[in-house]
Length: 228
Image 1: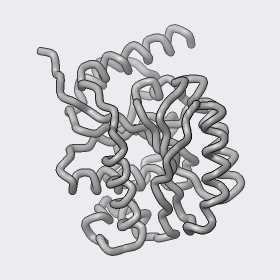
Image 2: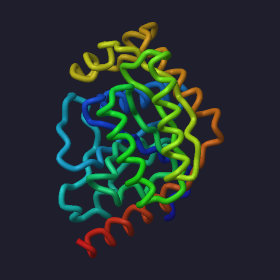
Image 3: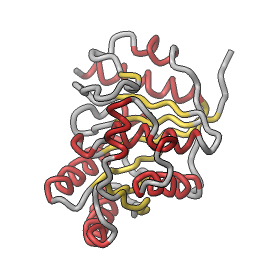
Image 4: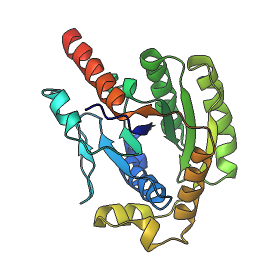
């Protein structure tokens, strides 16, 4: 039987030291509180699992990719942790992207590199920007720079999803395998996460059906292995 369940595929990219795994888990929790089922996938190479609730991890060598994918439980939203500069082909399975950034020069340099790699892999695509550990005022100029870079390489102007303050709640909850969205609903970072999800839901999201998503990723993995 063909599974035609609609799914929204969102890739999360950015520097590893900005806590993408914890952010993805918090986004998933916020979406789940809005009545969506969410699947978080680790699709970066050599990823260190830092929490007890670590996401499903892509097989390291790509072997039996089709079997791994078909064993995944269908969900309304798939959040994929991606790095197009290290492993590009999984990006082909996602229709929109959240770029996690900060105002620090090294993080902006990494963001530019990932935008260029994303363009080379996926072409024109939809991208949003979420600043982590950054005050609102400190994100204005970096956001403008990222928008200019995305306009050049992706053919789009990313939407700003907001800024998460330097709040240790998300990181602590991730290490303990807990949901900060549930345990600290009034913390500044959790409020910003909720707002980011509300904005994403208001942006006319693209969806595909579950079976088509599985087939798309399987083909991309097969092409990548053939070219290796």
